[in-house]
Image (tube, rainbow, N blue to C red):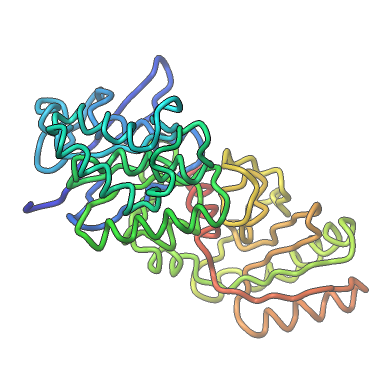
Length: 360
């Protein structure tokens, strides 16, 4: 295939008065993985449904495998696979029967369908459970079978819509290994996810969608460089200490804003300290997950401290050694004890919060 495997230009889509997509542009090179990140309701699944011919766009154009999704839908569907948010396998059938059923839908001859089902069951680590009904499968096994079903026709391009949501860490890691194997074999993948670590582990590029628009599209490393500053994470004895520390660190940080790499911004009056009520519509509150409370997030988008009283934690963008030294000294002078100190480089959590808050 010459040119990009997936190309979208100014896609728009509204449902009634709700404009879900407001001019989406995407470009996914052949053989690469693009991760599409965004809070709930930002348009990720709508984008996937348009690109997989399940939904028509109001305006704009899209091509998949060099084919127009609006005018050549049947040809597009022969070249793609889709793993949706909800598993599409049949609980009453066995794993093998499910794959043979999907093979039949792709018009594979019976002997070829059996052979392909066997190959996929082995590839996805399900050979031992091939004869069991899917109703007895674990969540991770069902998800692997669902991914195997999307691979029955050996598609050139695979769409994965939040494929690991709800999986335990072991199952998620196993599925990541399968995705890496598919990439190594030359499959092009568009992945939507709310797990920032997942995007960091798998993606060649990350596009952040917010308010129906792409607000950033770059490599994971380049996106982290945009945030710039290291993050100081402090654990304090009580929630009250967190609130006190926030006021102290706000005064301490004000003199350092705009003095380093441009990651910090001036704060408008009246927006002194932001706590955990920032209200991003994210996913479950777990490490590496888009969390509406910002519990795994970084410092405030304008360089001030981010407070998490429930976790007794304060996170602050550090503008160099002098800022770090003064921060710890001021806390000591105010009699605020610090239980743990962690200095870390920016993460995709920091990138996500900064980009989506700036867009908002």
